[in-house]
Length: 103
Length: 243
Image (cartoon, rainbow over all chains, first blue to last red):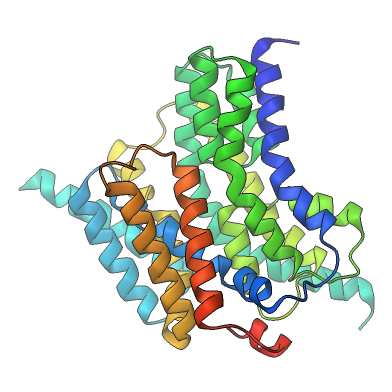
């Protein structure tokens, strides 16, 4: 087996294990109120941490990222669909970068 | 309704929810395919990485290490640390799936847990079925593979301005998920806001900003979710579902 392939299989294993172990091992509903609440809040905590500040570096330019960020927040605030928000943000960043080049 | 129609409907419902995720994956995977091949990996291996790993940060880091000819232990440790957040997501989902689901199905659906499928699945109302999760993961999985293949084989299919702007897609999607939730629930607002605050501190504070992005997300998640559990403990099952 090539060295590259070996490395890839190791990567796949250490990526799969943390995904699989809790789900397979924890089969009952957890009783502790704190842990239950904690786990129910994990999605919101992850979302917050993943959005910011990562979004500022997502387009390669701070200003266009802020423009896309603002458009996404605006559209999401009015409960637009996921696709609409994503396309709106992409389009606004693209538009901004194109205008910058023209000016 | 019989069981078969039921699970087909669940699959379709999940599939539709996965489409925007797939859309967001294509440009990221494209970049991955491009970088992997430019770094000297074969295009087929790049696609195989995406189909066997199905993760962004871990793949980028792992491939950088492969290109730098790091040893196996270093590659294993680095990618594992980046992926520790999946442990929390899997644990959180274990409480949300149908409790009688057999271990074999659990271990199959666990493969499809990504930042995006996890957040979409966990904000579903009520319990999650295997069929729903399978449907949800389907389009993103193939979108991730397709994007990688395009980047690896074609190399220059998007103008760079468009490629750059598509980098914001997944973040915009996260925003579209979190804002409606934060508008209706103070707890969601506080927890997400705390996640943002802690991750910003960890990213920008001079003495600690050298920790990896995997640790940053994991630490922010643990602290923000703990604060939420302390401030807004949930009593009944009902409350747990409608945060």
